[in-house]
Length: 414
Ligand SMILES: Nc1ncnc2c1ncn2[C@@H]1O[C@H](COP(=O)(O)OP(=O)(O)OP(=O)(O)O)[C@@H](O)[C@H]1O
Ligand SMILES: [Mg+2]
Image (cartoon, rainbow, N blue to C red):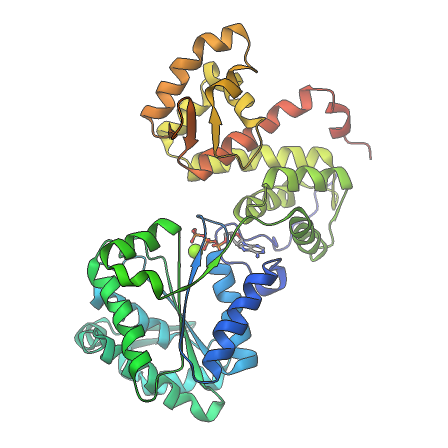
């Protein structure tokens, strides 16, 4: 068949999802809007910790609710990623830069911000501007105290007041590198407490996105952090939500998807948005006739498995998981389900052949050594340390599918 030229893929494996393709999370959005944004728009400060595993959709829900807040509540969104931040000055630098880049969906607001903060702009470019690093570095320390930061945030509102802005929605994302620093916990608590005690608090929604361990780490560094945040938990998507996602994404590029292929894709995505996008993207490129059928779906899951294995799993672990000796044992672990993070030795052993049983102890030792699994609380229990490795095993097990009795369903019948 003649190859059709491909347009733009509707899948975004490495980026927060665009609003049109955002699915699910109704309860969490409702909570953020009602208890967060709406309160802030009426002048009451709120702090929220968006908590969930890697790749589960924290940044996406932050972006989605920021958009809503800007459009419907006059709450101005600032999205700062703290990826490279090593100390509080770096954190404030990131907030300053994020402020400069804020207002993308409202040109009047972004113009006002840029005029006000013009001295931090280096060069004007065709697609935006560069940052004047020197000026940023010199001034950042002024904002590096709770008072300094709150003054800065209240000035933002002051400058945007006549565009209908009533509050600020500040997101601090990618906090992994900074939570070990006790100063960070103190800084965040300082901002929240100082603001709460102020005669006229800054209407601030402070949202931090991270995995549970990072929140615990912040608490460990400074105990009172424990009571600061309303926690919004992000978990796996439901089957119906995944279906809606694939349907919307494929329809947007005029591709249809057969029922069996749909259930194959959702089954292997296992509720994990990151996997959904990887699998969907693979299917988009594999498809040749604008219909995703079983064979396209099976191939795309295998492609996504390789992708997950090479990009998201430690290379030593990946090699071990690929080894022929362990393949059959791994496929039996996969059978326990995609999301099961623990298993018992007994549970798996009961499914193994004599030959596999002979290798099982060795396998467990090796996986423990590579830190893929760790011992659980009860004897004979093991827990996966890494969700991506676990999902890789699950995706990889789909290779077995064409060989068994469901193979017929996978053949092209068009
Ligand atoms: N509600 C959703 N609907 C559709 N796609 C989503 C949704 N949430 C997240 N995604 C997609 O899933 C992937 C992971 O999302 P995101 O980056 O928001 O997760 P995260 O929890 O912030 O990840 P990380 O821990 O890596 O920061 C992205 O490809 C994103 O486009
Ligand atoms: Mg993120």
